Length: 386
Image 1 (cartoon, one colour):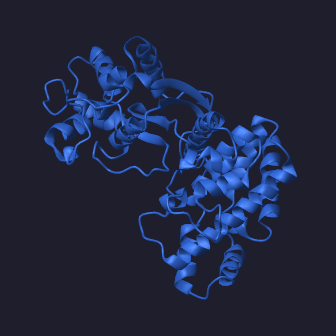
Image 2: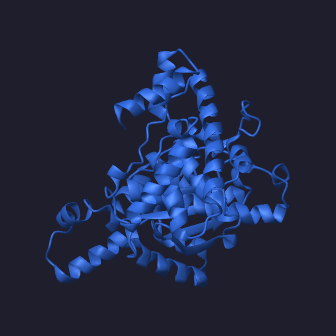
Image 3: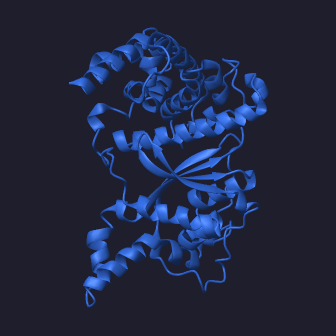
């Protein structure tokens, strides 16, 4: 970001407030973490499957025989414990999660208690960022339990009503670690596995940490079909498609730019990917409904915007400016898509997503935001040809 660009952003915000602390707060929140200079910091996006996919292909095959729940309980520690207050602080839980100790003789490892485990589906999905396991959970109670297991170490932490999906990045898979140990010991029967693990396994998380997308089947962002003027069954189908494309966009930014954070820029990118996957173009009304800004400047409590404000509480004035920025960006994305027309190819789609990644929220929200976005798109498209 050049000094001129910083001054331009500051001047734009100055039109809405004279409070320097608020301007600083908004500038900090909207700082762009997705930049072409960051490309390559994580694994490159290639046609080669990540190491964990081989194991998950086995899990998918096994689930067809014994069921998804029984398969995942067999291999993943979070499925081996119930949701229970303070369970993550127990020795048994810590031994299992951090040291890979078998839970077979642990009294507290009674399994994740689910309402409708037979309804769960498990598959491997080819995303824009490579293959990834996808777990679909039709029952809302079960979805919340699995989010608590994966995200909150089996602690009973409330899940927002508007949350219906998650990309779980970095599950310790002790099944894979034990397989690596067996393979190594077969060649090194008198070797020191602990030393080998510290030096040759731990520094390379791809060898033992997995990613998985978890999806519910409820209406997207807890928005009703009525409010969008479409049939309920169609909306349920669209919701699943949007969620999957949304989480795959998070996977893309993680692999392409090295970032996936709880920030509105991430959600702009991901919701754009989800909406356009279903409609072939961006829909401003849908997006603002998802965020709780359908009646801007009024914010509907329970909208998703409140989920992405970060750990530090945002001031009321900064939140009001953020609402304005998001509403403006929705306009910008509509103009951007109107200029380019319907998405024609997978490369066209990817280049649009990259463009939204590489411009910050304030620039996109400014009066010439759509022109800046089109310029960015053309530059990315030309770079791909060179």
